View 1 (cartoon, protein in one colour):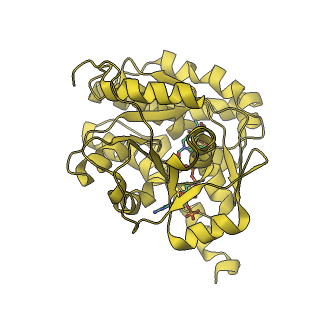
View 2: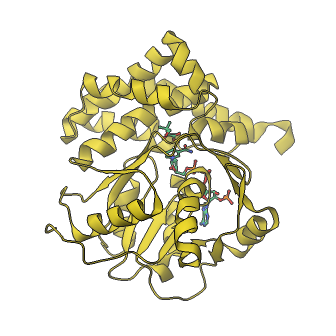
Length: 317
Ligand SMILES: NC(=O)C1=CN([C@@H]2O[C@H](COP(=O)(O)OP(=O)(O)OC[C@H]3O[C@@H](n4cnc5c(N)ncnc54)[C@H](OP(=O)(O)O)[C@@H]3O)[C@@H](O)[C@H]2O)C=CC1
Ligand SMILES: CC(C)(CO)C(=O)C(=O)O
């Protein structure tokens, strides 16, 4: 990818996944782009969204919705903000929005969504990205956050391409905090490490951020879980270190004490979690590279049992 200068301006954006992350960043894009920002969703979802409105930090948002079947010109930017298990359907649902010049960003946690999108979209190159220090919590149609954190993104080869600059210009205009990564493999693995640590332990302990902010034994357990990712990262060239583990501490302390990880939100709402894309991936890579992952193995089992218990609950019989 060659270094770019700004010749591209993003005028049209489509988002799929109007949950905690999608509604938080989507509200900023809607404020700026109005109807040039649209949310792709099925008729049934649109009806639900129109009946109740989407409330973001107390404000009722009426987004511009479009069904997957509606044909339209490709847009300048497509953003994915669904959960990992819904990604393959979401990729199909935005097909009418993607043309040869469309930039694609995936805000999903985990390290597999970009690859999945690239192979499903005929090797369409995408920007790699993670969202950091956002504490968005969703209850049904209401999302609230105390901080949007930032979106850290970049090309796979870390070049400041035309697409990277175009997204930077859009984020500046929309007031979305961002960082252009100097080393996107490291950034992706760092975020993966954080989610493997904090999301899984918070789900099992049913602990909001204030527990990790104030109970040392809880946070030590999260860090031990992260260290299994540090060991794995050495095998793939992402080269995380103990310093990377420590660097999450100040970020954790900036999150709202009552905020909750997306995995704890899933457990509380009775939804399937993303454990297969966190602990599940760690265990798989551990086997591949001969790295022990005992803590993740236990967390993986426990979180699956918690999901099975939800499915078994008398309310679901
Ligand atoms: N919450 C957070 O603070 C953070 C989350 N993340 C990551 O971001 C991703 C999204 O998480 P989050 O926002 O919390 O998840 P949510 O469950 O809150 O939102 C996902 C949304 O996607 C919608 N959706 C699923 N499939 C489709 C589809 N085919 N078409 C249209 N909409 C669809 C769901 O709709 P419906 O409810 O109708 O099924 C739901 O509203 C995850 O990978 C998560 O790990 C990353 C950083 C922080
Ligand atoms: C890092 C954290 C915990 C908050 O941004 C997150 O990514 C999540 O809740 O999934």
